[in-house]
Image (cartoon, rainbow, N blue to C red; front, side, top):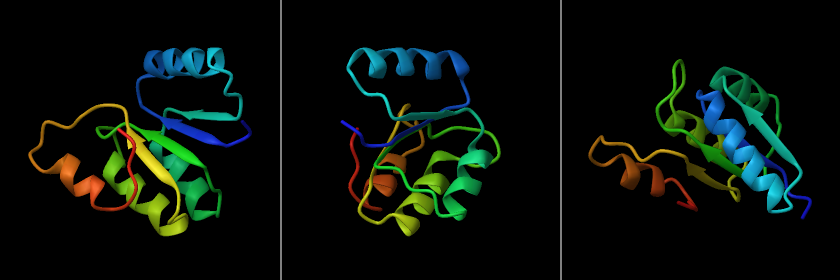
Length: 102
């Protein structure tokens, strides 16, 4: 598989765990970021990902905002988040924005 996968989470230990799991599953084209601002800039500069695993709760930019940016710039891409939100309606709100893998 040569698809590009973006994993964004402000918890570095979680990123490392996901990286190890995906690498052991044979996935190699991974981009891991702990700062959502870096991802926002990449998306605004036209970078595309085939799949994104997004943390909902992060400093500076939350996962829903990143999902909106990805869907605007790559409307056919799938996106997910790595932690369910406890805020009522967040999951529904995010899933209404396009294809979502949870």
